[in-house]
Image (cartoon, rainbow, N blue to C red; front, side, top):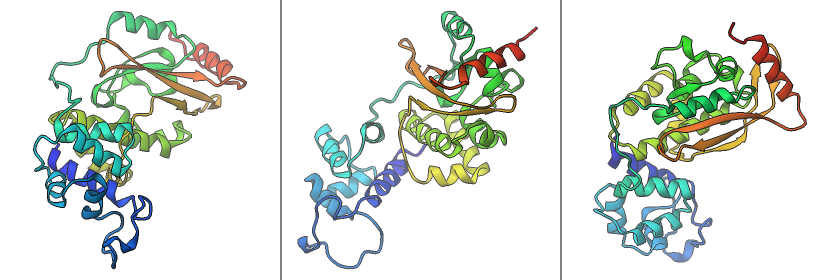
Length: 281
């Protein structure tokens, strides 16, 4: 990934979503006049952050050097960045939270695989770098995707979300799922800007999915780790489930994702039915 280009577009997109009125700047402050583009101008952002316009321009163009935490915090505050956007800004400017990228394949510990198998009536899988699916249990195979039938390259949540035609039926809130997926891929790209396999994934999705291309251009970054995520299975209909993400302490790039039945719904019984119906002989 071109870190300078990403930084430039990210800061531009964050400026574009704010107006002078949003941040308390009045038209009489010297920034009146017709606006050619929406959002805050560079000079307005510099004023809010308490830095010179020349320095902010250099920063936005990736020429700001090793900007201090105080400057980045001021810019983040002026742009009203949330915790994920702030971390993304730091990663792009200072290389912080950038984890070492190795070409080795991520391994799932036997104990984690045993944990997945113990969740007999809960779909669960392990997701790793680039949203690659590293391991799964039987219900995840039944409800999410037939992972054993897919190639290693195809076992990827981003590819499944945008390139698998059944995804829009599987995820009841597909648009929400898709936006969260794109936001995490961009967050991952900020952490690992020199990962060639991630760059290939982004290029593939940009070229093959108009929806991904549109969402990618919005420069949203976030990591949604829990919440309602209803699924659909043709045998039982809608499964009212919520997901929880548990990051593995010995590998921050691996996490267990489990889909839990919502209390007061038929989801628990439906999942037991699916587990019994499709159980391997």
